Image (cartoon, rainbow, N blue to C red; front, side):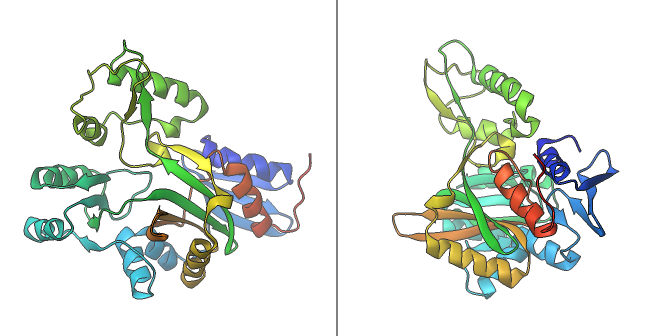
Length: 308
């Protein structure tokens, strides 16, 4: 309950005289009460959403299949069943993503898989988080999350992978730990893991954790862009093409989920994009937190007023 994702909500709620009733001190489960109305929450997920609808959106394969059936642009996917069929999928697409079917924050995700050895390692990594594993064609583009509240477009963020900058003295491991120490003071959830995927990323550049980057040398240490694995976030609300917003809004309304993050990869050169994932239980993260939480509280408690 003390994470920045929860306190962003609870601090804003209290400014509106909305009562916060903590239901579990160890998880972000709480109740918001204003006058005669109460809403139970898990981060920004509320009990206004049915369980079946939540699982449809939260499961990466089910969401992809649903969107594809309704004509939305998505990347090709299949569920992992055995190595033989997985290798055929890899052969068909040449470069794939391996990820747990129901996780968040980049946990267990490996991207740019191009050979059997990498595939086997990626499957092992994904199994640490979930028994059901999704294989997906690797598509490229700018990573944007479009956030909708009350079925309306509120803001968008651009996510970029975690990186470090060398000083000619410290190793990659030391630079990551130093960056994590700095980040942990403001948001412990924005740290770079020293895990297999980070190692695989730097190995692809002929480096390891003991390598010493040169002075001011930029090193991208993750391929995934998740904020929860050290990625950076910028607000880009006004940069999203109107046609992208329109398509994503139709998906939000079709799913009937009033508060939803829609993750897309956009190829601006061809003016096309793919919907990669949905986030029905999105964590309201910095720096877009204030924008989203005010719209969210307006939706839940339209009669509440901010008291300065």
